[in-house]
Length: 521
Image (cartoon, rainbow, N blue to C red; front, side):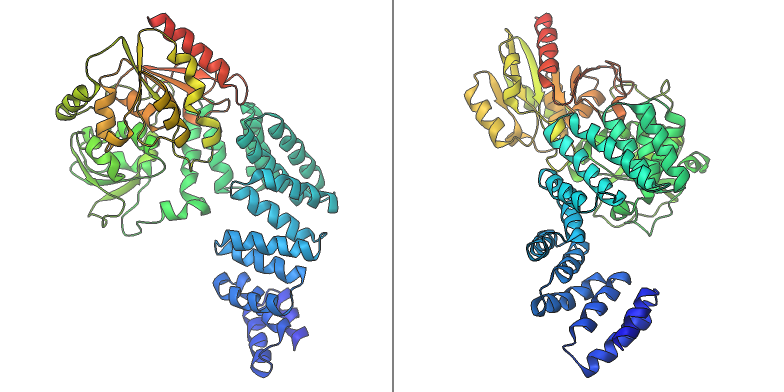
């Protein structure tokens, strides 16, 4: 019967295979082969949670490398990452040349922010099977992630070579082509990257992840018309399902259909992505109100006091029940609604304002002005995938503190421990984090500053939305919205961009900011 169960499994007849395995276990409850195969059947039927106890029992009784690898794979599927890593390592302890365990360990390490550990594991895996295109792709993925961590440019170049080699080993390898596009974009070789995204889509038409990546690259290059259309693929990406399928009880409509709604219709705009994205794209809300519809805006609670001053808008939180509405659309789809081009970005600032009451409170907190008052923001969300490359230790800005007749205020709500030590040790440098309750407070504080110097974080968007002078320090391969090769932003007329000339080169950026700051005195 075991042979029958295995044959049914190999033929993809998983329900029948499960039935045979259960028959075996009815007669022999501790039959390890049947338990193992039944666990694998559960995985193939997308019932990974049911597979875990079965494979744990098999691993305890028969701890061989294959079982350990299968158990690790199941644990990874159900999100028990640390346990999965431990099982993959156990498999390699039992059998150092176990290729599946090597590949799986490298993959899960890279996907969970441990690329520096993943790279040597995957190099060993590739040595075990040099002609494996899939292993070359996994190594390249880890190298790209390691490049983000180490802020170096040799990893993207090596990743590029691995992807190209994988494509020579497997015909029409769409994953390798798409990831090669990403490696090229990471080197600011934008047009080459776009060509490989298009190649990947020709080989795997309509694949949402690749189409979204193409959209980002097109937007970075200023090709807004096609870029916004491809940008919509984010809603179909499996990894984003929790965001884009969470309000199934509202009537989602296509972005372009919003302008065809009758006057007086109610539109629910749904929150997505980060706080900075919400601030940037909230500029479209008044345009929709002017079109004669009633707008309900879903937004994170820390934005409510800030957004409440927008006219014609009702606010709800993501945790609130869905309100009655005639149509719903995601906020970041509005550029497609309004056919935004590079020359038609709605950039009338300010489109957000601070309240008079909070302005008075922050004026009192700041006290009398002593020279140029400069705000600083050096770090954003630590969970952001590019946090290591876009945040700066506050100590790196020490050359700015020597500019005469300037006082500095750290304007971010969350200050990291190393930065707090710098604040305490630097005369004339103040922190506001404990006093900032929400973004309405931050807006009021910024309104009293002469200039904000910041990395790519939500405070940069807020200053730009308020129409305040802001100098934005950007990593070498920036976010799509900042485009390439320009010192201004079509999104924010009062913003000046300072770009790294090579990955990780903040010194050149800080030197340029320091010279320009000195020129203001």
